[in-house]
Every structure is written in structure tokens, then in C-alpha cells.
Image (cartoon, rainbow, N blue to C red):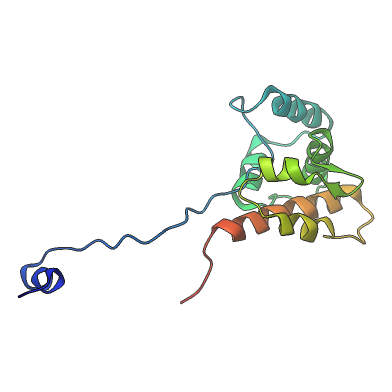
Amino acid sequence: MMSVQDRAKDNGDIFVQHKEQRECVAPIIVQSNGSFSSEGTDVMHICNNSFSIPNDYIVQFNTNGALSDTVDKTGMCFIRCYFEKASLIKNWQLNRDLIMQTMWPIKADSIEFCELESKQEMNACVRSYAIAKCLMKRGFEDTCNHTVA
């Protein structure tokens, strides 16, 4: 008797193997449009009044965890402002519960790891950006498969 797989080989049937695939999800920190909470929108406006950056910077940061312009510290200061005003960080301590809600699917060990990022940096904007960038990178690593065959 012919097995199903043997028959498929003989007659050209196509088998689809269902493997668990994890979608690569970007952890979004900085919320940039009206579909998010009004509190997040208020924080955006407050920080953009002090540190005005193009919306493209926010979109890029949420896409790849980096700002396109790191020579001008305005974007970094915007990130610092956002983190502080949104209560994501206080005195260099990340709000674990809020980060885990905001940046799903980030893992708890990423929070402790990223708090120490650029610990020696004297510029608060640069350090805040380094922490945010670290969180984004770790969030991507937690969800994206970067293994090379």
C-alpha cells in the first residue's frame, strides 16, 4: 500500500508543512498617531513643543530602533522627554510594568540589561536614547529570528 507522501511524490501533489512561525513584531515605544491613547498623544505634543522632530524620525525609530540624525541631539532629547513624561523611566530606573505593556513582547531581562546602557554617559539625552535603542533592539531580538543557516 502506498503512503500519502509516496503518492504525493508520484502525482505532483503539494504538501504544506505547518511550522510555527513567529512574526517579526517591532516593539513600538513612541506612539505617533491619534489611534493611541490621548495620554500618549498629549506626551507627544508636549515633547514635540520642546524638542521638535519630524514625524518621520518617530516612524523610523519605531521601525528600526534608531534615529536618522544623531549629530543633532534634538531627537535624542525628544526620546528622553517622551520616556520621562510617559513615566517609562524615572531616575534611570525603567518602569518594568509599563515598559512590558507598552513594548510587548519585550522580556523582563531586557529591562534590567538596558537600564545599564551608557551608564557612564553624562548627557541625559544621549543616555536616554541609548536605553530606548537598547530596548528596541532587544524587543526585535525577542521576536525576530536572526539565525544564519
